[in-house]
Every structure is written in C-alpha cells, then in structure tokens.
Amino acid sequence: MVSRLVVVVLGCVALGLSLAAGAQAPAAGGFPSKPIHIVVGFAAGGNTDIVARTIAVRMQELLGQPVIVENKAGAGGVIATEFIAKAPPDGYTLLMSSLGPHTVSPSLLKSVGYDPVTDLAPVSNVAQNALVLLVNPTLPVKSVNELIAYAKANPGKLNYGSSGVGSTTHLSGEVLGSMTGTKLVHIAFRGGSLAIVAVLAGDVQMMFANLSDALPQIKSGKLRPLGVTTSRRVLQLPDLPTVAEAGLPGFDVAPWNGLVAPGKTPPEIVAKLSDAVQRIAREQAFRDKMFEIGSEPVGDTPEQYRATIRNDIQRWSKIVKEAGIKAD
Image (tube, helix red, strand yellow):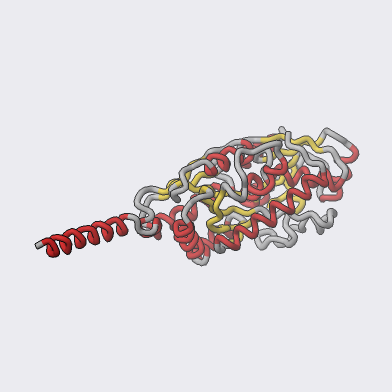
C-alpha cells in the first residue's frame, strides 16, 4: 500500500514538473500574444516613419498580432531611444532606430539616458538611404562649390534646417561646415517634414533632407538639389552627383533605419522578430516601396546589425571628436 502511494505521489510530482516546464517554455514559443508597438523618434511622414509603417503592416500579418506605430518625436530621436532602452524587455515595445540617435548622439551630446550597445538589442537593419543637399532656389548657388564659396563669403549668415539635434540631417551640416571651414547656423525642427516647410518658406536657406522628403520637392522644382550624401549616386536621381563628386571629396553620410528592442530582450524573441524582418526585406512589394522613398532594403541578422552599429559608433565618435562638433 505504501509503495503504491509513493508511486502515485511521484507520478503527481512528475506531472506537476511537466506542467511547470510547459508553462516556462521558451519565451518565443507563445510570442507574440498581444499587440506589438514600434516607436518612431521623429514626426509622422518622414523616412523613418514610412519605413516603420510599411514593415509594420507585413509584420502584423506574419506574427498574427496588431503592430502599432507610435511617434515620440524630439531631440533628434534621443527621447524615443531612451524610452525604448528603459522599456520592458519582452519584445512588445520596439524602436525603429536610426543612425543619428543610436550611433552619433552618444558622442555628440554631453549625456544620453542609454548605452547604445548594452541598452538596445539589435533585431535587424531594415533599410538604408541617402540624404540630399537642398537649397531654396532664391539662394544664388547651383552647385556644392558655389555653396561653399557663398558660405565663406557670408560667415554665420547661412542657416540650415534639420529634423533635430543629433540627427543625420543635423550632423551632415556640421560635417560640411567642418570640412570646408565655414560657419553654418543650425536650426532644429521636430521632424524632417517641418524642416522642409521652413526651407520652402525661406525661413532657412538649406538642409540635408531624407530622399523621401526631397524627391517631391525636386520633381516639382520648388527646391534645388546640389548632391547626395552617400559615396555613390542613387538610382532615383542618377544625374545628381554625390557631394563628394560635386566638390567635397571624402564626404559620406549613409543613414539607416533598423529595428531594435530593449537590451535584455530574450534572444529567442529577438530571433523571431529578426526572421520576420528578413523575410519582409526580400519581398518585392517591400523593395518597391523602399525604392519609392529613396531607400534600399537590408534585412540582416542581429549579429550583422550589431557589427554595423559598433562600426558606426566608432566612426562617428572619431569624426565628432576630430571636428570638434558640438550640439546646439
């Protein structure tokens, strides 16, 4: 009787352990079980926002849960980045990150509320794009060389807009000024779209705009393009030279947008999210949309994206230090 009781007790214990093990299955097994939020650190309508909203639609279909995009603009994306760094590491709150706040701001600003390496877990680099140097047509310049000459002849009188302090649209102007020995006045806006409006109105004379923001203005003739910031020309504007070709050798700024999670998010959840992004990046519909806004799909692994981030942190830290660039 005793031995039979022992067998029953052991059986119950074994069943309990089995059920407990099932309840503690790998986190990705039941992920996601509720809506996922993707935070964008810039105003709606800009390049980062469009990339986030485009990929969110397909992620929702692949993962079987709503994927909601939220805008938390401010400080060139730093506010949103800090928010994600402190969010619960469960995969339900993500950031569509970008080069500026992720790899530049930690060197450019006196302090940020996050460590770009340990507080953020790379999921996948989604897309990369070029910026276009645009000027208001009333500015008497038609090339990069003419712009440089004008800036030298009018120190402190040439204003340029950006989507925020620490953004690539800001830093590109700082690098231009540093490389040419000219003094440009930076005016920060809460998003690239607002900066574009300011250039159109003549409130600022120029800006480095995301290609998605620049294309409509270029096609309409409302703003004049002088060059693209990347090392090679873009397919959307094949006749427009790079800034390096047009008079400033060595100039190269290639922004990217990538999905990241809070730093301690379980690897299995990160992997599941990354697999979805990589699949979407290979789809023709997504590739066509990225071409439309001037971006190039990437879709890489967390390890590959982490290497990109580390390399960019080192590169921009050196540039910021050597050029003596300071935030406003």
